[in-house]
Length: 294
Length: 317
Image 1 (cartoon, rainbow over the protein chains, first blue to last red):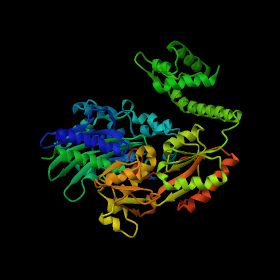
Image 2 (cartoon, rainbow over the protein chains, first blue to last red):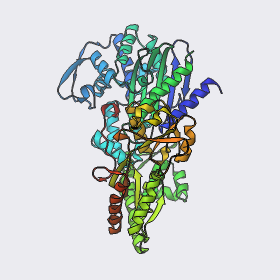
Image 3 (cartoon, rainbow over the protein chains, first blue to last red):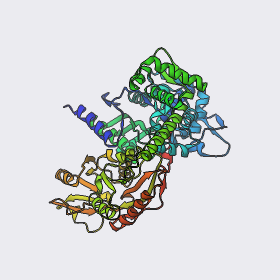
Image 4 (cartoon, rainbow over the protein chains, first blue to last red):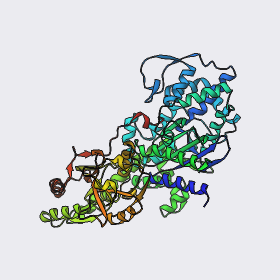
């Protein structure tokens, strides 16, 4: 058995031990080597769609069509647990500050406001220009929430959680978990997008640097970052979460080099709290990086 | 129109999203199945499916009907089973299940119950099977590991018991006189009961270990303490309920510290089952388990698990 197939067997075993299936892809950004598990399988993006949105936004700024410092007034904003989405009163913020909130705390209101400015067509054009043919963004956060609440016949997030526990099959019927009906990509295309950002090719060098900085400000330390503790490693990533879907995609830099990593885990268990799965995302990334490291 | 029958046809197609496969499942030909689904659509005044040349998908109305139809059919099944039980004069004794991990406590519980209820029938089954059996009315009371998902169950009474760690007798941690902090097990291989026995409880336990910084290196499965002892030879530690008798040769048992890390269970019965003999047995369980070292936990729980959703775990986080 080669070291690589031994690594993918370990990835499967680690996923199985926490009752999950999923996809992993890792790219060594300097040596070009890769490792993956179902890396071309369609996956739902959840909040990771905010990453291609960010790139489309920055390219629009590069082209002079959007001013990153322009103020945006937030009205009728999408709700959510973090950032402006969780706040109550009228607010005006610059485009770049909204982008920062979107990437640092996955702010749904910021994301939907920015998508309103950029437009789905421009996001799709960006993906086409970057040759990411399996990546599609169709819905914003408000759409995703509506689909979730409709499918669960729930009024709000608390009722959604309760419904998922009452009806154990409900989680398997959610449209937002079906890649063919929602924002989707593959683990391989996610690491490709990251590769382009880290190589200053996804947009202008200045814009790419801004994207990297914003990704490094993400607050959740419990997924990819959990696999790379200590001062030796820097992690910049974007999480994605849906019922039973926990994902993180980003770049890890440390002593052996720089690695773009995308991990998506899927379980049919309805619990919203699963620190063991969050931690496993870090473990899967670490196993893969260690397998590629010289 | 026999609405119930037509709802069964509809659900089969909704689950398969393919008329041919649904027809096979129902042991009928495709054409009559299609006709019956159309008849249901006409009767309800809505389209339930979008049929293209390549595939079948549910309309919004169809999607809504899926949940409603399942509810109706569950109620119909329950109604028929209840009446069948009455017609058949009941089963005589109540059926009570205990999970395999209960070990010695199962025999002690049985001994005390059978004293006053000699026709109680005891079975051994894992938690997930017990829940299915209670729903299908093949079981009256289950001792089920919690938490678990699923509606229409009553958890009363609820209990917890300290877990312990089985270690090689010469392991440095084996000589601990106080309960062992979970964090001392971090990075070791851990042997546990199979996840399939009680998946939500297993996941919650693993989640708690991670949350307190005690994430294991790998998980091994052991259905008995005896088999777990063999895994100890490979460096694993086994976490479970204390064995009823002496531990296997060469091993030692140390209690695990931390209230959240207890083994939690409940006596579970079907919501709506108010038979007096059930109440009597539940009352006995409530009195007996504390005498066997089980600590009562809070109030009874009607219905499924209630979770606090934290921002980092919310959809779209």
